[in-house]
Amino acid sequence: MISSFDLTKLNALLRDFYNLTKIRITVFDDSFRELAAYPEQIAPFCRIIRSDERGEAECRRCDARACEIAARRHSLYTYRCHAGLTESIAPLYLGNVVIGYLLFGHVFSYASYEEGWEEIERLCRGYRIDFKALKEACLKQPMISEDYITSASHILKAVASFLCLERMVSLKQQELPVRIDEYITAHYTEPLDARSLCREFGIGKTQLYEIARQNYGVGVAEHIRNLRMEKAKRLLREGNLLLAEIAARCGYKDYNYFIAVFKRVVGVSPKRYAREIK
Image (cartoon, rainbow, N blue to C red; front, side, top):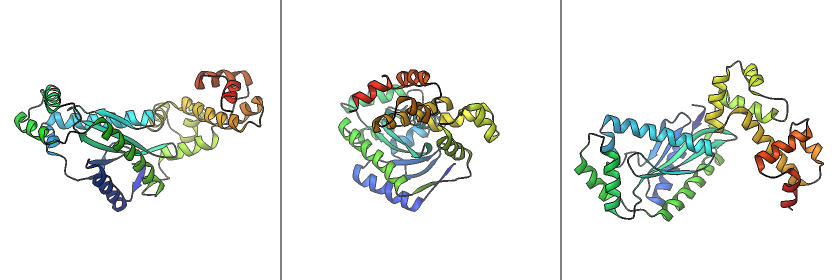
C-alpha cells in the first residue's frame, strides 16, 4: 500500500454518503484490498452470493477488474457486476498516482423485478447457493433508476476529490511508485525513457511497466508523451510563444516531429488548435 488513510474521518465521510444516497460505499487501497465500508455489513444478496466459494472469488475478481478499468480510464466507471447488480467506482489520485478507489453498490437497476431476477438467475446459475433466498433478497432490493445512479456517481466523484483535498489520505513518500511519479513530473521535458528510469531506480522494465499500468493506465513512454502534450496545449492557450519555442519547452528538439506527435495525439495541428481555442 502506497498511501495511508485517516480512517476516523474517512468513516464519517462514508456515512454521510450513505445517509444521502442509501447506497453502500466501500474504499479500496491501491492493491484492491477493502479498507472501510459503510454500512460495514454487506447486503443479504451479496452474502448469499459469497456463501459459494466460486461466487466469493468472482466478487473479488470483479472488484479488482473494475478498479483496473477505472484507473486506466482515469475516470468514473459504472458497470454491472458478475451477479447482475450495478456498481460505480472512482479512482483516488494524488498527483498522477492511484492511491485507492471508492466503490458504491450493489444496486438493483432494471425496468422491473421480473426482468432483473431473470438476468440475475441466469448469471448466478453456476453457483451453489439458495436461489429461493436469493430471489427474496433480490425482491427486497430497492429499484433504483439510471438517473439516480448517475447522480449518485457524480456525488461519488465529488467525495473522491474531497477526500484527497481534505488530506484524509496521504502518500507514503518512500514508496517506489511515488518516487517514480515525482521524478517523471520533474523531468518529463528532458530526455527521458523507460531505460533511463530503470537505471535511475534500479528496476527492470517489467516492474516499471506494471507500476505505469497500475498508476497511469498506459506505458511510461505514452504517459510522458501525454504530459508533454498537456504542457504544449497550456502554452498554446497562453499564445505568446512561437511553435519552435513550445516544442523545445516540451522536450522536442525536432520541431517537425513535435507537430506530428501533437497532431496524432490531439487530432489537429498545433496551429489549428491555437486558432480554435481563441
